[in-house]
Image (cartoon, rainbow, N blue to C red; front, side, top):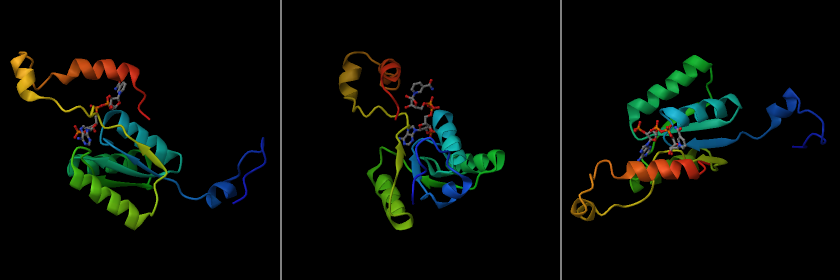
Length: 144
Ligand SMILES: NC(=O)c1ccc[n+]([C@@H]2O[C@H](COP(=O)([O-])OP(=O)(O)OC[C@H]3O[C@@H](n4cnc5c(N)ncnc54)[C@H](OP(=O)(O)O)[C@@H]3O)[C@@H](O)[C@H]2O)c1
């Protein structure tokens, strides 16, 4: 497809001819991820909203379809910490689309393995130890 000359606005016909872009958003069922899904779909990008929980993910897709009247959004299960789940999503994308243009790695996982026994030995709560780390990283790390 020919690009419009610099300084020339793209027309509706240009938009229709533009190749469909595909995005995956991790942790798309709520918060920032949900809003990113909505805005990408609103821009005409085909969005795969992923969530680790089937019901929460499907409900989120339904809410975007209903409230924003958008149909270019689908659900696929993804737990970013589960290799089988990741492989299943990759297979789905390969089979159904054959490409991926945008990955929004939004799911709130810091990717640090904790030594539970070590934390306990230091008298640190294993359930909440990552929260101070997370808040420091969140203020410094860009999401995309
Ligand atoms: N909100 C802010 O002000 C802010 C500021 C800076 C950076 N951030 C970053 O932006 C991202 C989203 O923030 P948020 O406030 O929208 O967070 P949030 O409301 O806590 O949502 C986190 C999302 O990640 C999902 N998630 C957690 N573990 C997952 C896993 N193993 N696999 C797949 N999905 C998983 C959650 O799914 P469930 O519903 O199943 O738990 C949820 O959809 C985070 O990475 C955060 O660090 C946020």
